[in-house]
Image (cartoon, rainbow, N blue to C red; front, top):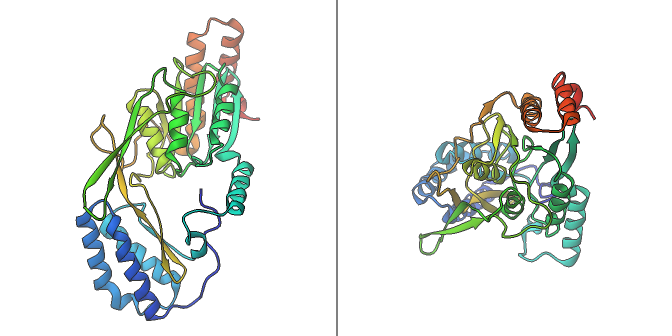
Amino acid sequence: MIHALLLAAATTLTPAEIDGVLAKTEQAFSVYPFPAVAKQAVATLKARTPQYEKLNDPKAFQSAINHDLAAVTHDKHVHVAYPFHEELNAHDEPTAAERAHEHRSEEEANFGFFTVRRLPGNVGYIDFRYFSDDADVGKTIAATMSFLAGTDALIIDLRHNGGGSPIAAQTLEAYFFAQQQQITSIRLRDPKTGKIVEHQQWTAPTVPGPLYTGKPIYLLTSDYTFSCAEQFTYDLHNLHRVTIVGATTGGGANPGDIHALGSAFAIFMPEGYAYSEVTKTNWEGTGIAPDVAVPAASALTKAYALALVEVSSKTHDGDLRKEAQEALKDESKALAP
């Protein structure tokens, strides 16, 4: 997870500074996984240079270049950021102090896990906001799944999840299957050879604690659900393990990295694209459509009602059936803390 990258910067730009940013943007496109689109994007930047050079306001320049790149690439991951603190991106290996600060920030955010609850009717609920790349995220996932192991249905709320590390996704997904599963691959372009190399991804081979198998899972989505959160959704849906409730996701399937451009600018540049052996494609530009389409704000109430019906119809415990049926009378009330 990247923290505190956007800091104070200069308030005006010179034509020379703009030219420098454009030159580094063109270099960044050397890793873009679609060469024809990269060529078109670079050509657009060159053609628009005279207009860019007239923009001494950094925000106006940022807006103009993002508008032009979006029109060419139609890629929601391609985005120029301003202001950007280049010193934080100046070396590959963070110092011990930086690692300690980052880890502490992750601990304070509970590695993205904001809420874990057992709802009336014995329905589990997880609200997490990003897939952490911290080495200790597995402990939080294990604790979460241990806490929810006895529930009869599970709701995973991704409506505010903008993505993150696939390793965390692979770990959490592994709890939902008795055997290791192949999931979405990542295809990367080598900028030197131009060849596309596929990196297969699998759920984690083992996880601590009890698995969560044979029980219904509902994923809540919105148009903010993006990138790795979409892969998580795509994987589990392709493996027929979840029901998606909510709105179509954001549509970003091209992972990459941040490239500093100078003058407090940076660009997130995709270096590959997701590829599913099941669908032979991905969700780029289209997003992932829900199984049960409702406004994102209503997704939790809807999924909870579906889960309660499932629990009520399957349980042999009279008290639990009564609890689930009582919650069904007013799901919003039952969801209140």
